[in-house]
Image 1 (cartoon, rainbow, N blue to C red):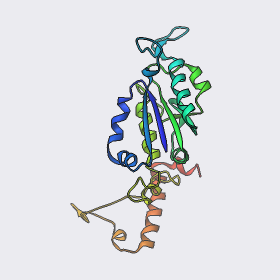
Image 2 (image 1 turned 180 degrees about the vertical axis):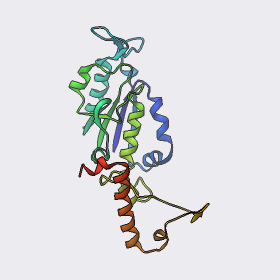
Image 3 (image 1 turned 90 degrees about the vertical axis):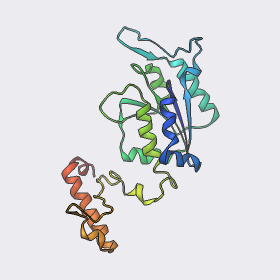
Image 4 (image 1 turned 45 degrees about the vertical axis):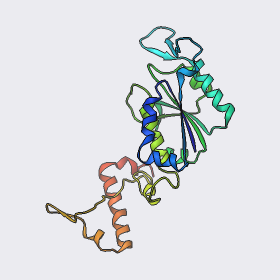
Length: 226
């Protein structure tokens, strides 16, 4: 899988891919990450990529031309399954969306800044708009990293235990069951006996029931989606 990330501040993104699971995925050549500095596509001597908004209003807007040049260059080199724009008014990211994107071969992620991007960028180039929540960030870089992490960990070979991703919360519209490790007894708080029994069938049933119970208590809205 190849992920091209377009940003006015690519350094905010690049460092994250140098650690942990994301780093291993790159080293194993399961995924390739390429960050593109939007300023390199400016035709302005000052590398300007933003300008005032037509009609007035506060804040600057990312111009269509630099973004167009970058996306068109990438599209001339390979085909892309999706050109994604991270925006608060996009579709709310969930596990099903991450699962679907993880099946793609190549994607572009555009990170906004300032007041946003010229609407013509969205009209011409974008075919997926994704939000990570009903709040506003200074830019799309952090949101892009959330998306990348949620997608890359699903790729075969990334997780040390392939079953881990399958048992994540939200995979079946359910929250995951409680998990424990050593010691068995911490200040009187004991690990449930069933988990020490070695009976895989009973443990599996216990986890399923715990998952349903937690979802009913904490996120009953998820059960309504079934």
